[in-house]
Image (cartoon, rainbow, N blue to C red; front, side, top):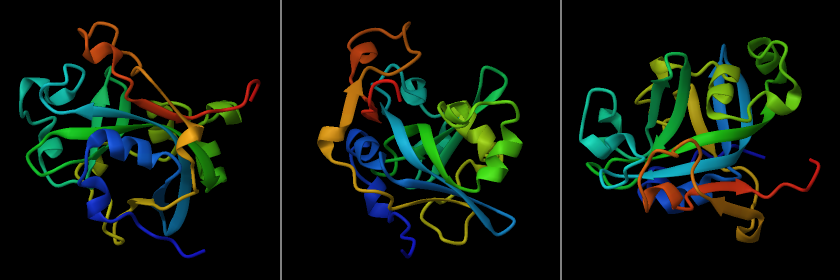
Amino acid sequence: MSSKILPRDFYARSVVDVAKDLVGMRLVRIFDSKRISGIILETEAYDGENDLACHARLGKTKRNAVMFGDPGHAYVYFTYGMHWCLNCVTGPQGYPAAVLIRTIQPIEGISFIVTNRPGAKEKDWCNGPAKLTRALSIDGNFNDTDLCDKKNNLLIEKGIQITQQSIISSSRIGIGSVPEPWRSKAWNFKIAMPENS
């Protein structure tokens, strides 16, 4: 099956729609001409300056400037003084919205991931935004990477077909101090997993 990089217009839509549609797509990291990839299992939407859980809530800063740029670029930020998180910029240029990639299921480059996640159980390799960036060696150097350009080392491709019935939505994680209605927005999207999986 030939690879298919998601086009710019995929990202140039409502952040909530993009977050839903990214579930099932394939995140690809190229390292030394080798592919490390995984199917995206969980995402979260962050929607502009009015969204009090969004980094853009206080306006444009050096940290979040990429969010105000072209859709289809990576927004990679550092948090808690130790973790990198990967996001995809969405919507029209100038509107700061992005999708956080929270979880992937590794498909390619397993030995690379094992090396980067020593001691971690397989189920814990990439089941969190900081875990997956560590597993794929994604850091601040990837901030503003064009995810639509095949020459780059970070891309998102078409993945597997996911039915809307297979996706469950819930409130976003780790934003307990954010006021309503933003705290309860059901903008976390993930594949419904069987019990005991």
